[in-house]
Picture (spheres, rainbow, N blue to C red):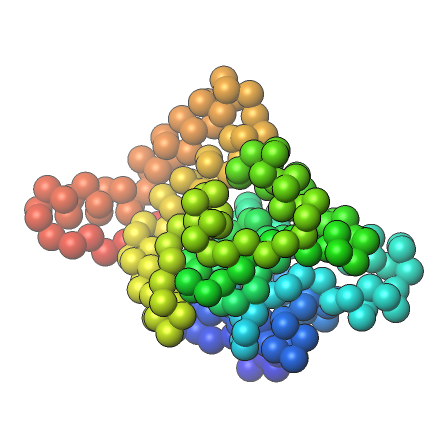
Length: 257
């Protein structure tokens, strides 16, 4: 079994839960954590039995962002290398054909949820981009994605002032799907993960791919891409099972084939 230094990783049937485990550093991401994240996420992608990934943090923070102590001890080139690897990780998460859920407890730097597919947050969670307060411009992709997720003025407001936004406000902006009581966060995350794990995985992958990839295409290209993803599913056993189960009034069993 893999011995993780900065993460806790648990497998429960089709769900893998990844917990950032640097609570004394408010789960700040350092190079070791990024390397371990790459290992666990690529492993989740390749294992057919894994259908959903849940991310959360240990202690009073989901993650406050990059590790400032490591930044201070690094050269500009080393920090750029770190950010490139984080960008690569987020692109991998964005392109992997499995849903990734963030269960946000406490403080959450928006960099860390920019590529996930579904966000649950405890009602006491806080969201923001505090980097400006230490003279850092966020460097791992959020300044590109955030204006697309909300709008340019709101994105600038969050990044310029570096203040924490409460969970209700984050939900109103469209950055959070569901708010829950803090003590119910992980339980609720697992409930949503189990619902997704019962859905046809190839279909979830197609839906995620079209939504995530189409914004980089022209409208005509995106329509053609959506059509190809849709058509490909008609060659799968899961689609036939889904239709047969509906007509036979029974619960479908999807195999990912």
